[in-house]
Length: 338
Image (cartoon, rainbow, N blue to C red):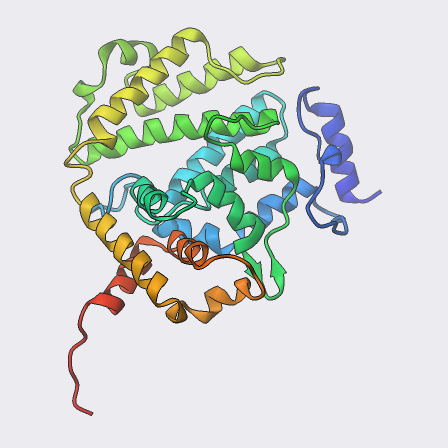
């Protein structure tokens, strides 16, 4: 018996009857030899962490475009906070922590530069529309590649959790549902923290009735939400909040939409971002031969239309990279005498 098999046996003994056991995975798209050390979900987690798409998250906007300061969240720090909250929930509920962590780390791999503003622009420009959760699945299934190896070939359960971490359809596993809650807990609370730091709102602006229920501080609110989910979900085949905490959380989320996500000051640079992405998208539709060869090699012998290729290229860019691309295409270069 190898280490992986021992771990699989430990899962059978200690995890909830509602947890997803590694040994019961529905498998991968392409069959692979099992690792002797790691379970399938542990391998998925490692593949995501070592991917180029994961590294690029450190230079992608979370909410505030081009913020001045070292402590504002990026898409990477958001992902790590979601992972931490997810693991706390999974461990307390005796769910599969490795599966939960893999889903959390991969859930935003398809996010665009400049956050949801970039997503909105690509959704408008691309004939097929654009949703970051769908793109995240496309990243792990197709766009991440090394040599001739296409995609990360993740397990069904991780792929399902990534795709359904947002949207109307729910994940099939409790681990995936846990990440959905963790994502919301993370972004509501850390966006409040960033908005206060950016002088968009103050502590006094937060709805008093909500604060009285959830807590006055960042840590208190997160703890209240986590403990409530644990108390309402332990030993059950469902992940949920109590009515009282759920309503307070939703009210706080609505407050953030009204005062932060749609705030003119917070979105003061949004028109510029929309212009930049639109111009680059249209440029490459007309000049597809200028798309970088190392990025386009994956499409050889593919039926993907040019709109897909341009959309994939832009969605994978970081904030810094897309600005450099814009400068190189549209900003005149100084004349130099040869």
